[in-house]
Structures are given as C-alpha cells and as structure tokens.
Image (cartoon, rainbow, N blue to C red; front, side, top):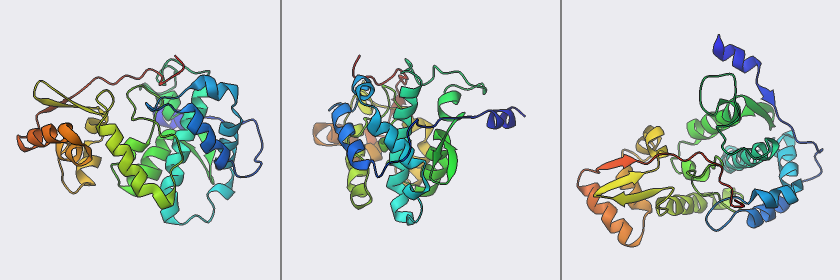
Length: 257
C-alpha cells in the first residue's frame, strides 16, 4: 500500500520554457564551463545562465529527442538524460546541501530525489531511479555505466564535461572507469594492505561481477588502473582481494563552495 501511495503522489518537474530546437551544442558548451577538472560542478555558473540546461530538459521531454532512435543510440541518450535531470533537479530544489535532504513519502534515504520526482523523457514520465535501473542497468548490462552516472554527491564518480555520444561511447566509458579507479578519494585506494572501494562497488557488486564474466572487483580495478597503483592492485588481487568500502559522502558536489 505504501508503494502504491507513493506512486500516486509522485511529483512531476517540468522546465518553464518550450522546446526551441536541438539544445545539445549549447548544453555541451555549458558542461565544458561548469564541470571542473576534478569532475565537480560549479552551480553558481549554472545559476548565472540556466537556459542551456532548461532547454536540454525541455528537449528530453519532447518525443523528437527519442522517437526513431535505434537501440544502439539509446545507451548514450539515457546516460545524458540521467545526468542532465540530476543537475536540473538540484537547481529546481535551490541546491540542497545533499540529494538526501528533500523528504519524500517513502521511508528511505533519497526517495524524494530519486524515486518520487518524475520527468517527461521521450514518451514516458520517469523518475531518476527508473532511468538508472530500467533504462540503463537492466538494459545495457555494462558495469562501466556506474562510472558515467553522476548523482550530484561528493562520493559520486567524477562528472564528465561533455555529452556521451554513440560513436565514442565505448571510448568514453573506458575513460570514465579509468578516471574513477585512479581517483583515491572517490574511486579506489589502497590502505594498510587492503583495497578500499567506493561503496558503489558493494551496492552493485552483482553488476560488476556478472557483466565482467566473473571478474572480482579487484581484478576490474586492475583493468582500469595505471602505473604503480596498477601493480599494487594486481598483487592484492592475486592475494585474495582483501578489501573494504569507505563511507559514502552524500554532500552536494558543489565546486563553487
């Protein structure tokens, strides 16, 4: 009953502007300005000129953004939709200190942000949770998507400063995994003879193991690491993969602060 009540009470969030052409060029330029080298987001800069973001969300809500796309084009489309809608919701909620701050109906952290708020995307009204799990995770079966999705939190994988594109998607996903694994703060680090992973590797361990054909998370980290870190990870992977997970920081990934 509680789930049915929450579904009935979900709140739609729409941009205040009409569709006025393809916004992707302007939106890509905006990403290049507001996403820092560290993969954080300068929300002050977005606030100063929100139009590219609002136009992107308006475009996502029009069937022309999705209609006729072949399956191979939809992977990048949904990654871009998720990340844009996260940015949009942060701005619409006046930049909360954490995406867990808005309170919802369901007794779970982040329910208002990820489940109970919906957006017009293509031909459907979807929440961020539905986009992540139904349109990306369970459809694409690619663990690298966890490195590509940004949830506007400090422990999220670094935000990419450009759109994902079908013709470059495999290269981009590879790069995202490499950047994430090599990030000691948000990805993977080594402490006291153990590999310390982002909790995402724990929450979605089945994704990493199943879609890598049975590799351990240590072996996956080795595949995307470089230099001395790769050698240290290889030794630990060969020694049974002693590991633990650090505490996730849900505070807003606000570079302007």
